Length: 409
Ligand SMILES: Cc1cc2nc3c(=O)[nH]c(=O)nc-3n(C[C@H](O)[C@H](O)[C@H](O)COP(=O)(O)OP(=O)(O)OC[C@H]3O[C@@H](n4cnc5c(N)ncnc54)[C@H](O)[C@@H]3O)c2cc1C
Image 1: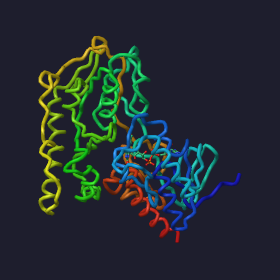
Image 2: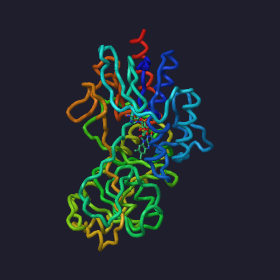
Image 3: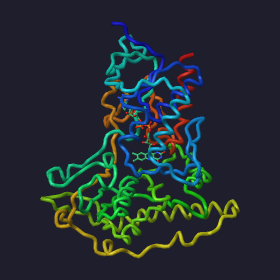
Image 4: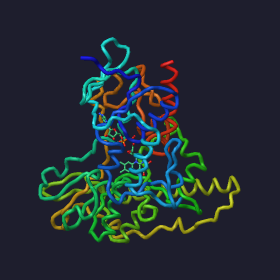
């Protein structure tokens, strides 16, 4: 049987795989993109209907392709992002083969390249770029595994409030997904309990500008992986409901019951850590530190930006913080659904090339592995703050394409 050969194989047809394709085309490097489902599949099937892009329209772009919009300060809907990525694939005429999975990736027998076993037969390539996403496998703790009477789902399966059975909802996890889903549910009239973990939060707008404007003005969006610091929590931001600052005290004032971290459960009764006030204080501290940083920047550069003292107003401690629950009986509280907003893992089990560490994470420097010709793209902090973000993918893709072009020449 003859084996198909390509110079460069890109695995994954999301924003990263497509940006990579465009960069290779611009450098005259032949390649093929394999996507196991459809272009932008994760935006189609692993995000909820009401999700809004977290960055304002004016800042959204793929390489050589700005996001078309009527309102620069608005936040795109999920379906607008799907249309945007799909239109990008057409604009760059990406050579994408949809519906083809890479099942395993190995070194080729002669050791000069790679052999991909795909759902449609083998393909050999000199170079492979793994662009299968920063958020691959939903993580669901086993804490309520035996609670079969409660409807449970990961945030990636959540679509909208109507999908859930009637009754109260427990949202576990206070990252961007947990916070946004909790807000959507309580605004839809649901009784919501939110288990809050360690988080950092940032203002949506401050002194007349959006957060993204400030990140860029202060050069924080250029932070490299080496400058990252020890705190690995992702800051909480949302573009939903016009884009507002996430403040769990406001959530509580509007009726959400905040809970400490979930530690265990027995017969439908959940044990909660007594860390709620500590968690909120940590989040508030990150928020205030950011305001301080902006104020110092304004002062240093003599910028004419209006002061905004109201941004520092702290809402009073809600009852659920003054006397936090230690246990929660799910049935007694009328909780019929648990949404696990507990994050994602990577899953590179299909890569049979010695580039993964003992935790299954790729070992690389800015996406370049020690195995000549094998690259990763789109992972969190691959090279910098923006590496896994839609508008930031172009820089890493360009750098890897330069590497490949130099290597193949
Ligand atoms: C809830 C949520 C909200 C987010 N919101 C924003 C936001 O507002 N702004 C922002 O910039 N970023 C956001 N992100 C982060 C990031 O932009 C997205 O995760 C984005 O989908 C990453 O694009 P990607 O191309 O790197 O990976 P993915 O979109 O995950 O694409 C990878 C593709 O690879 C395919 N694939 C996987 N394995 C194989 C295989 N073995 N063979 C063939 N194909 C394969 C998948 O089907 C998928 O289509 C969000 C992430 C999440 C989870």
